[in-house]
Amino acid sequence: MREQLLSRAEAAGAVLREHADWAEQHGRLHKNSIAALCKAGVPRLYLPESLGGYQVDPTTCGLVCGVLAAADAAAAWHVMVYNAARLMAAGWPAAMVERLWGENPDAMVAASGHTPFEGRRDGDVYVVSGQNSFVSGCHHADYVMSPMLADGQLFTVAVPAAEIEIVDNWDTMGMRGTGSNDVRLQEARVPAELAAPLPQPQSPPNRYYQGTLYQCPSRVVFATYVPVALNLAERAIAELEQLAAAKVPYASDHKLARRALAQHHYARALALWRSASSYFYQSLDSVWAQAGSGRPFTPRQKADLYLAGVHAMQASAEAVKQVMDAAGSSSLRKGTPLERIHRDMETLRHHGFANESRYASVAQVHWDVELDYPLLLR
Image (cartoon, rainbow, N blue to C red; front, side, top):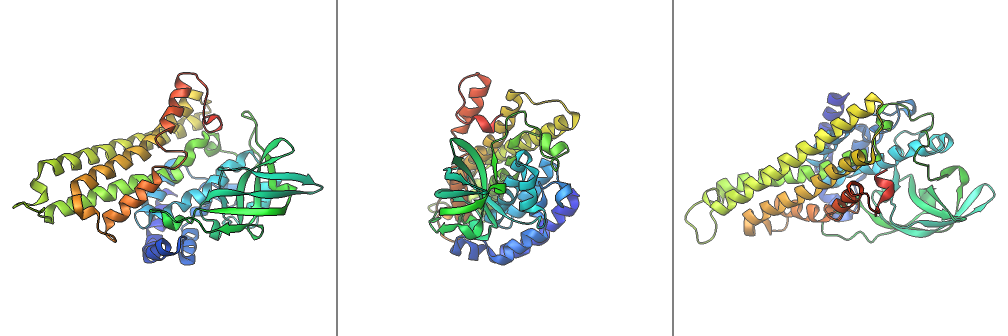
């Protein structure tokens, strides 16, 4: 299955490259790119086999994401857009899962946990209002998933896209094609079947979610988007190597390849990317092996997986910075590969679940102090 999915991802890359500039300009993926992702099987990576999914191991998911990122980072981000909700759904009632994917395994459930909606129960529906931010893929979504506070209890709610107004405010320096706009709704009537209370830590998964994947810690979701950052770093290093062989810096009589400072930055970037990538994928493999053995995960082991993902993101950002420092003015020209990589990486490294401050979340578990993101590490 892994080789087949990687081959499909390679084939999708041609379509994604063709429409990457369109996505950058319009702030969302082209419809042909969405179709190519579906044809490649992206929406089914973390979906249970019993619902028509592939239920792949996290390493396979990460490798597919990396192949897509080589074509278009914003398109590869949709590996997360499609699969984050599918992974979370293990703790939802089976009826809700059937409603979302029973007839269409490729249905997109775009999501954000930024700001809970407000809801109230009215018979067989919840009346829901509010505005949420950073809803990647919202232009193509069938549903939008969000936390919802209703009657003093926190739920997860999936709101049909027809009830949602998109606020086109995703005007950023990078990752523009993700279309991560705000969404808002006012007094939307959502079937109660599409709302689920937050599961308790020891709650068993619903009947569709059986198998090794769903025994893994929730942070295997990192495999759906951290490889985008790793690929940006890899591409930046490759661009620098080509540049060094051709560029003669200003006020110099020899090529960049002979400049000691450029050599220093290149080697540091290479070491950062290689070590972070190895650490990340080794962590995914280790988690998969433990989940398959049936041994439960300790809080510290879950935090260590979190650390691997955060570090891969931040080390990739540092590697790109090293490349930019070596490339000098050649990294500043708009429209060049390095300029685009730099913008995308600067945007990615501030993501709420993998930004620099999340190193502290790992220390909080190791040191047994209050957690700032408790649900993500348990």
